[in-house]
Amino acid sequence: MMTLRDLLNKLLGRETASANTARERLQLVLAHDRVNMSSLTTDLLDKMRKEILDVVAKYVEIDFEEVAVSLETEDRMTALVANLPIKRTISGEIQLKQTEKDTKK
Amino acid sequence: MGNSRTILICSGKGGVGKTTLTANLGIALASSGASTAVLDADFGLRNLDLLLGLENRIIYTAQDVLDKNCRLDQALVRHKKEPNLALLPAGDPRMLDWMKPEDMKKISELLSEKFDYVLVDCPAGVEDGFKNALAACKEAIVVTNPELSAVRDADRVIGILNASDIDPIQLVINRVRPNMMASQEMLSIEDVRSILSLPLLGIVLEDEQVIISTNRGEPLTLTDSKSPAKKCYVNVSERLSGKDVPIIDPKNEGKRLRDKFIRLMQTKIF
Image (cartoon, rainbow over all chains, first blue to last red; front, side, top):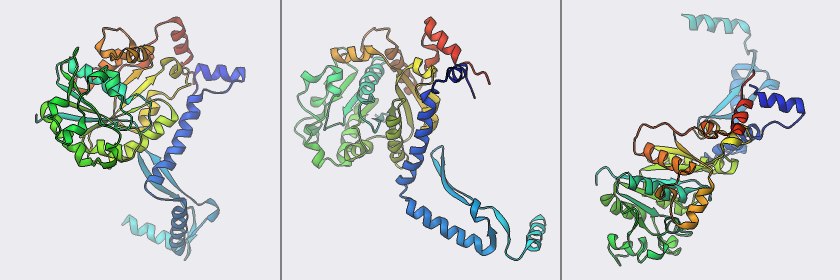
């Protein structure tokens, strides 16, 4: 989204309005505060991340380079969001197709 | 009184306008005909008496009521210009050492027997003073300013309120500067409301008249001033008492050419 003012600022090479910066900084600091309040520390989060990966790695091969586990806060609800891209299942793709069929039934 | 409402006015951060809101809201509710008590729960740094211009009329305090040195009606200070409003003053700061949530609860129960509204002016912070005041209330108004530190502290307070039985919890955004919001140099009403995810009770515009009225010890809502802040306080009090009136929109507040220009610059182009 861009307003007439933003355009003018851009043309004149001025800094963008500070409310956007304020909003972004606030959202970051609140995400942190809210997690701290529920006493989920960074150490615990790291530990949890490792354990989740260990469990998932038993069943599927994960692309470790692309793994992202983070806490996201929206509307006062904090969610643990894990993005674990799967390369393949341990016993190969055939099994994956079978389970797909199973779920269709 | 069965349907008396005890309302906590809190903010976390100091200096955002809790006491000013309590005083003005108290007068506005009282002048609409509802019997209203304002209770200063800020024992460490009491100021509500000063804002109401009642500082020279205090004889007994909440402490004397609890110690049974006097009856409740002896400690209450009635406002001469608005007899529907009474103040129960805070005791001395030493009360902080022994006050328990049950003590505050007892005071607010005594008050709610006699008044339609009991507004509790809460101390800043999230420590014992705040928790004592919290125990005395059923509803809450969180006051904040459109500034980083005020919103952050409000968020912590809301976290604690959400974990209690307080309901509803409503938001008042104080010291709003329409021009700065229009030029996007201040967090917008919608920014603050959505970040804190509370229903918005109202906004109060930044206004020099607030300082002037404090100097005089006469809340704006007691005067026949046409000032923007007074209009906002009355709006908040009407909405609080259940009247279906719209929230004041800061966008419509400036009528000068400069304000119109600022609004033009807000036009979304893509």
